[in-house]
Length: 126
Image (cartoon, rainbow, N blue to C red; front, side, top):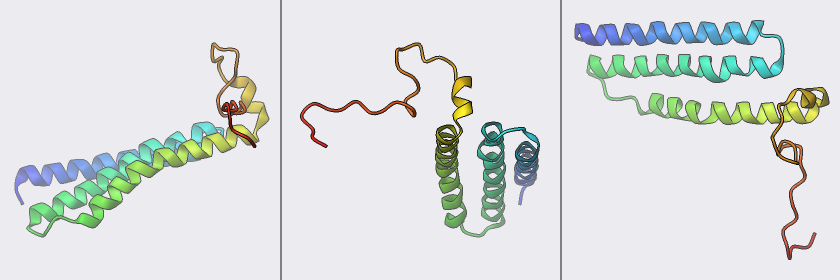
């Protein structure tokens, strides 16, 4: 491997370790669920992604083939972590009624969409 490759792999590993530490610390130390979601969904996702990309780059520069499995894992992780956090946050807001009064105003006559009943469409029968 070249010196540039070594520096790139080492930098990605250090960056990944930093984000993993910050995300884990946020999950352990933040006071409530809504704040704790940011640790694993943002920082830890970036940490794991950087570590997987460092591994792919290392084996690519070493002369082995490109690891499709690591690329698929990284893509799947970046696509599913935000969706999972959204579902957990919506479930928390629907179950914990005390959180609703802390939500900012929507500026409309109706509240947040997760709490409003859907409008009936004309011509549909239930």
